[in-house]
Length: 216
Image 1 (cartoon, rainbow, N blue to C red):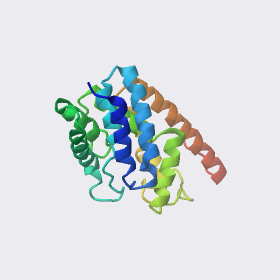
Image 2: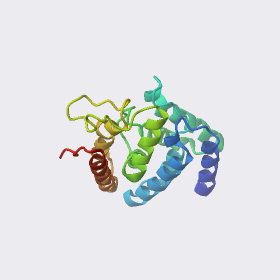
Image 3: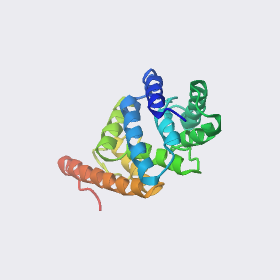
Image 4: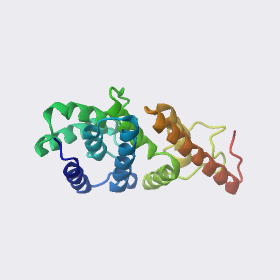
């Protein structure tokens, strides 16, 4: 039987020793994903022995947002997770399930989810990109990449193509507001909609203060 408490401790130590690729993917992000994954695990009656290590290790290999290897990041993390868990003494028969849950969490990798546990980990990671925390993480990442907050002439891209490399607000429309429709669990979908609604209220206030009306 797996000692989940010891496994969680050792995974945390392993991840905490690694350098974050950007300020939005630090150890606090990992801890939030773990907390949410465990909540969804209970609701969905998923296997904790899979979701726990997968959530802890989902970003154990970090690749910068603007790196050409970005789409491979989750697969690299999955390979590294298996290597770590095998050395730890994790059951060989369950390594493939953890590998898939880690690899499939990524939005850019676009790997179809094949298990309840992978769906839980994917939802937990994507929920952290939404709501108040999602706004903060978007601004942190955009600032680190040198992006402007918004286009002062057209902040909500009503008359221009979206460019989330140039403007942080554009990322809400290019990716973040699409996340609720990708949720794999019912509980994750409901929470994603709640958090997305909070983000729309924030954009509405941002537009009001900037002198632009948020389109319906």
